Amino acid sequence: MSNFLTVLKKELLDIVRDKKTLVFTLILPILIYPLMFKFMSSSMEKAQSDVEKEINIYIDGDTDSTMAKVITSLENVKLPDVDSPTEALKNGDIQLIINIPENFDENIAAGKNDTIDLLIDEESNKSMIASSMVNEIYENYKNTIIEQRLTANGINPSILKPFEVNIKSGINVDSEEVNAVASMLLTMIPTLIVILMVSSTVGMAADLGAGEKERFTFEPLLSTSAKRYSLLWGKITALCTVSFIALLANLAAMVFSMQKFMNFGEGNVEFNLTPQTIVGMLIVGSLVLVTLSALQISVSIYARSTKEANSYLAAITMPTMILSFLPYMMDAKGINPAFFNIPITNAICLMKEFTVGIFDIKHIAIVFGWHVLYIVASIIFAKFMFSKEEVIFRN
Image (cartoon, rainbow, N blue to C red; front, top):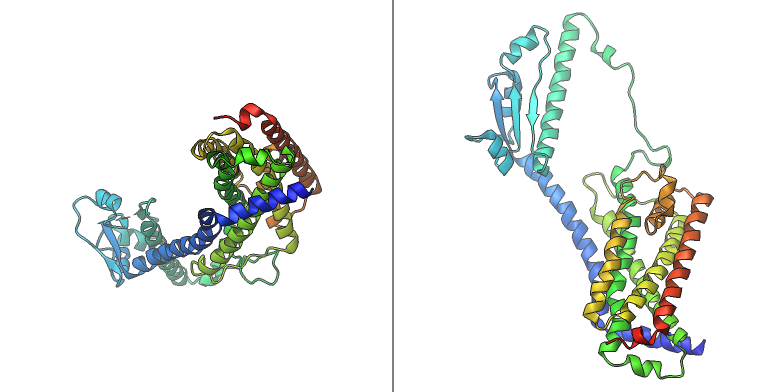
């Protein structure tokens, strides 16, 4: 036990002394998240503001119709002269093409139905925002025409609105509105947790094994009185400890940044994360962390150099990230049971259930059972790699 603690202390000190690792693992992500979410929020707000200031539209068809005049009367609407409306829309010179059928006013006055086409560029945020604004204007004008027709026939327009529907949260009874932004961001957290764990351990894992070989400090470490298993456990525990601290720091920075900057005009984003949810997510995340750390240490010991270790570790990182994105768009309350048997994916699925307040004992038992198996298998593999002379002294 004393040898293990000595090795653990030594490895932790080595990690702390490595300023580069601390900067890229702890400090840089904490700074990046506020900047990233602030940039995302500012970009969306700027796109909204630009459209409110000026919309470039091309009107095709009956340009003398009332519907054309309704749009052109707006101060922020511009009608640039373009040779090819389709190309102008594709290039971003205009945000919208409005096709108004000929004799539109006559058809409407005669009680006929007609169709106005809004052609948008679905790859442009400005075009999407402009279409929503114009469509809202047309919807209001359409309702006005309907009311005029009903009034002309002696019918009260309120007959079209026998009742109204208010969408409220049935879970958060104290909330007056459904915060769609918070719900969307909440589903991102489990996936981001795993990605944070993978990205924060790669550099340190490469240094704990292959890095020691490059510095010629591995052989002296093996010549001490400490048993190899103590060395192995010390390295794995040190990697797990620093990675867990990095996970907490990154997660706190991420949630703070989401709440602070990802508003989009809906007010502050509030996450209803209960203590049970947070503890459950941290426990599941820790199980994943131990498995990844043991595998990464094994790969790092096998590698001849840090560069080679980083190449091998990419073979672990890439599949892990792919598996972490599988349940990204899944409904937390309707996850297929088969996904609780897929490595990495099952941990995210369970954490997604935790975020919506579901604590299914069956799912918890399945996921925990699999992860205990993963941990045992990864540690056995690490011990096997650490016991092979041809692996340790591979050069």
